[in-house]
Image 1 (tube, helix red, strand yellow):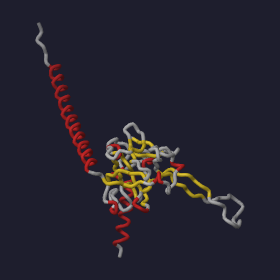
Image 2: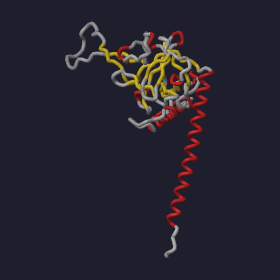
Image 3: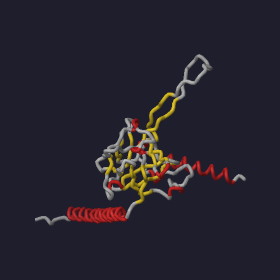
Image 4: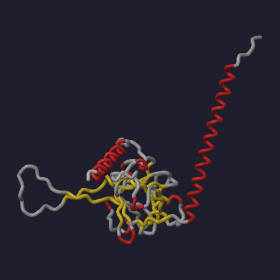
Length: 247
């Protein structure tokens, strides 16, 4: 009987310790973080993390992340900048990274989409599944506070008058011209805010394979170049220690 509460407690402690490794304001790879079930950032119902997908907007554009930090939409079917890695960072929260640009999708406090070189809190988006398989992605940390209408009746003390408020979420959105919309202008029901996560096709997998091969080649070249430079430094140091006979 005590086994289930103990497992829950251990899962919570694991979550706390994993969050402690990511100090506030510090760059943190979302793959190192865990969801509330302690599953290492893996959504069991979403098939693992990261998921490689292309986010196809209902406005017929693929979301793409450029290496220079720009965000927009592309009508191209096989565009490497449209290949995303979607990683779960918490329950219902994901990070979206451009595989070829190496940057994270982010939204600032003015509702503008941008591509961040490092993972930060503005890169966290609440993922919701809607009908017909479309998803929405809302900023986790930025939204509009809207006061609720005052209720009927005036009970309550005459001290501080507090009115309830509701948050209107800001969504990732690509309009009919392929441009991102400001978050505070979006709605979850807009076509521009609905995205279909598409599985990669054969041409996409081929581009990913070529990218992986080129990265491996660069890494090998860097390693060999480093060894060669170390050998040259040692050789120069030995030559400097050689004493020349006096005339």
